[in-house]
Image 1 (cartoon, rainbow, N blue to C red):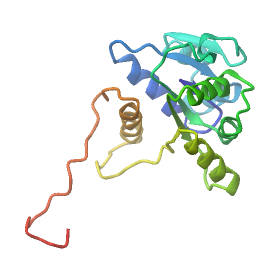
Image 2 (cartoon, rainbow, N blue to C red; image 1 turned 60 degrees about the horizontal axis):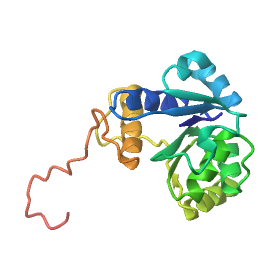
Image 3 (cartoon, helix red, strand yellow; image 1 turned 120 degrees about the horizontal axis):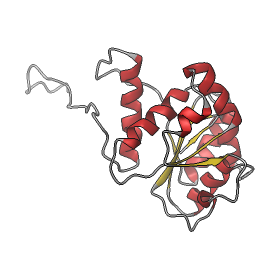
Image 4 (cartoon, helix red, strand yellow; image 1 turned 180 degrees about the horizontal axis):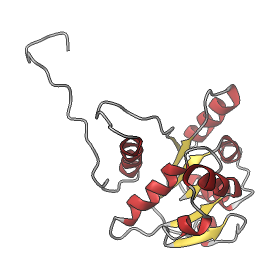
Length: 192
């Protein structure tokens, strides 16, 4: 798990909280310097508060950490949120910090890499970088809220998005609203 310097730090924090609720899941975390700034700006959280949510924490410059090796066994990695700078570095194989090195390892080992990219509007470089990561096997997951479950708060929108990420990791989401299909007044209606 990594938190980089894009807006949306709440996604990273909430994902760590949800992962902590699951048995037999160990979280390894690294946070960029800009990620720390966003945690303070958006959530009034200090680095230590966020790091306390993870089982193992690594400094972002520690490229010799366990998670920087293909021999480190894991089910996947999520960068939440993922800045466009981090996306670009991953797309171009520039492993200049522990976030981008770990992502590179996940791609080369053909493991699950989910990038919750946060920016709008998108320019052509952003789109090409997303395409590049997708072609390498990564999953681009912008945290775009769904409304079919009729969220009543921002927290519900965040939780729904985070639970979808847990689904992608193959982990059982905690209290995830599921789409049950449209209610049809007349089941013989052929327009549907």
